[in-house]
Length: 540
Image (tube, rainbow, N blue to C red; front, side, top):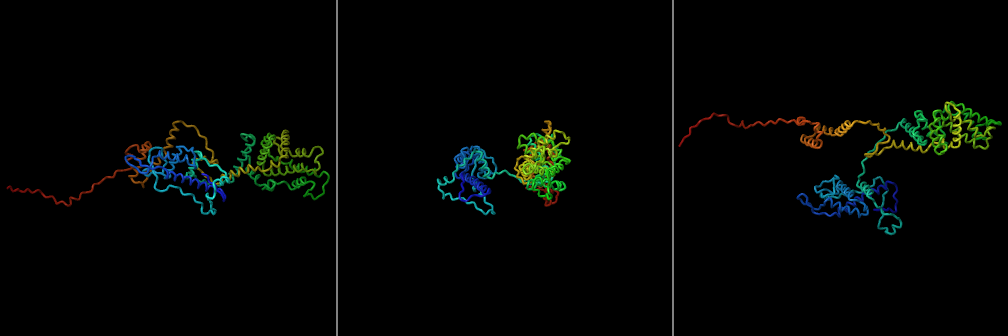
């Protein structure tokens, strides 16, 4: 069946779902109406008794199977087994009943069992729109459109349902949606959020580097998740970190010197006249400040990490992404100083009005030599470090805007994960365990006898509890309790025997009451005993 809506458009997903739900109910009701109106009803005999207006299960399967195969709402691929499944749903939803009026179970089988239609209508009511919805979805009047004209305006193919699609749609139509429950998540603490940011950031870095583990180059315990969060969120419009602790800021005179070189020859903070070679002295002042820091900007603990990234420089995109994540691990003060320094070096390199800062080497070479060791070096201070630092600083100068920016994809991924953990979840029976739950512990092997013992006890524990509940129930009458115990003994004789090994133990539950016969009161009405008096008979 194809529904084509013209004129007013249906706006919103709710309206579309409403139409689909209504269409499925229409399909369910239409199938029931055709089945009730066309299924032949005859007189049948069962166990020496005749029943009027009924049919056998096999007759219903034959007739309904032919109906579904030739109906435009379904498909010729509908099998006889699926027809039996549909009739089971009919029996469960009281579309049909057996000749004794029983229904509600899906015990319908393709055999000679007799069934009949109930006297009342089993059709499902159509869904109604919520009262707070103001808009009303209007279906067009199909009589206003000519068939050929309608096809020209909206071309479309008739929907052919295969067996699987038909069965899924049928299950939704009769309301067989699996039961679910809402799981309200606990509020994430600051510690939880920090652990999530650290683990997901390091996981992303490990995947980017293509390594099985980061343990050989990084002590994960030394990674401070607060630094990552601050480097991501506490930034200005240019993406430069804003420090919460103002005591770790660059000195004012260093910032003034950097602004002077960055905007040379227009120096906003310079109020005194300059002299020849002034720009070289300003550059040397900045280089001296960075050179006398106790630790390089990339820190000693992350030295091995950044050195390993150097192996990816041939793959530019991977190297940029790896360095972008690595720089998130830096303390915010180091990251801010690095961002300001790399911005300054980029401005100096692109400033054509700035005179050469050295007579022997070029400006770019001078900048690399002056700042390489204050950016990357190890505690051992070997000569090889200078070559590695030079290589890294050269790459940073070319790609600093991408490397020192916040990785938006990683940020969005972590925020989505946090939001997922905090929102209410819909849990269906049999669904996989939630990923936020702790991982299951490893199991150990047990012997076959122990396994058999656990299997038996594990299966019998609920039965033992049920038996004890019947025994200890004082509100149950003795007659009803005896009946239930007899049923339990018939179903689970082993459990019952373990609880009541002897007839005496069972008899304790039902102690026999001594029956006292009522005293005869007839003796009170008898005359007192009189001695026998012999009389002499008169003989004729």
